[in-house]
Length: 533
Length: 99
Image 1 (cartoon, helix red, strand yellow):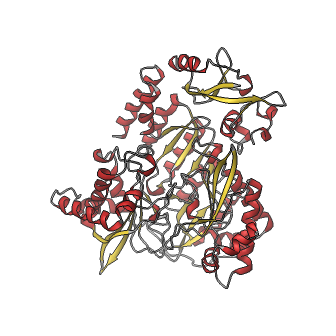
Image 2: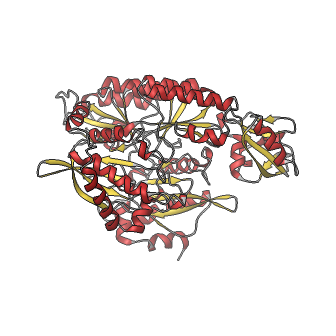
């Protein structure tokens, strides 16, 4: 199926180059295959379903970066990878190379159901109730090439998690699904109408338990109501969040339930055997017992362990976060050589598995504690060992005006300056968990609405200006950040971030994160520090 | 002055109308006066440029053609955060020019 699609696109690209298709005719065709035209060149976005890939696939991504691009790729907040310097004449060959490793760029653009994202710690986290990946995969298969949902009012993003902890910004998606257990039975909680962008909304829960054998029918009902009544007349009001908001969650839910009741009789749900077949692909690897403690005599290693590893379901293992955020670096960028190293480490130490995290890092989900030092040593040598997960140096930043044709301001230079400043001052540790997120425009690809500290770049009479916001969270304590007041220039916003952290350090009580202190003391002390009022 | 810019159809590279063709260097851009519409239609139809458009620009104190909007200045030199990937003339123009 994917190979046929590659050849179809090869023909479309050829016809464009020969002038048999105009750009207006070709644009929707290339976008359906993930090919955008950005500031400097074509950009190809490749889907990484729920962020999961094996070493061979990561190696293929590295080869593409080297052969067709400029030696690097950019991991995104939706667990995909983007290449920034693609030539139209190479695009079909790249898609063919991807197909050889069971990857593609289909549905990474356009008004369709996009790549399904999931908790990057799925199948590994100690606090997991149910592994969400089989359900994400089932939904991926259902949504791929779905004829009814190829031309939705607007793009549609789904996230699936399987624990109380939300590591996928689930409630900031068009549909968020939490796989839960109730009285021993597995089912799904549905949330609908969340999103970021120019009108950020937190998705309300619309169903607290959907039995597994009705999962797809319920999702289909949610999409059908949206597809029928979503605002096709106004691009800025076309996302499902606007429909849910305008109808009200109760009325939207009533309509979904009506549609659901109707569809139960249609029999579209895949048989449970199919879900079982999919689930078999996600069986836990053959974990073995081993040491549960390690030698912490090397302080750099100990710091990395404390910051960048996450508790695993098996007590001889951890999940290890590979930071793509060196101080002063470009968040989410990795060179071909770094990708190959990550692939090698996955093969050697993590059951051939890698995850792209929505935080623009990469995860080795299953690493024996006994192997951690070897993993860290290799990462550190390659510039991938920054001990900064969930700190102020672990900044999410969209490509911004350095690459993106939609952006109003540059995000990456800000991320670089802020991470450099805090790394140099040594205050990162003191600040603890502090999630800073930067978007270069209102589309919010850098998740600024969900940052403990958020920064939004805007165009102010032809110059870059930055709005600061505080108090957002994409986690289970989800909230939307509030703007502090007038914006700043680039120097000003870097200084403002420092002032905000000063207020936090001065006011925090024992054990409080930045977000906790903000929620306790409110915006005023921060405003006073920033604007003197 | 009014100048024309677009992308090369095959490579996607940013290009600038130099009076007879499309250059990779913004300093080659020429003032098209009132002829923008006619040139754009002709060049796009011949697939010598993709999605071209007209922009305002000035000649700055250094003698460089300077697009009015920062977005086109970033396009002219390349990503400010990957100066190793910039167009060859970027060093001559200088990165302060973008801001």
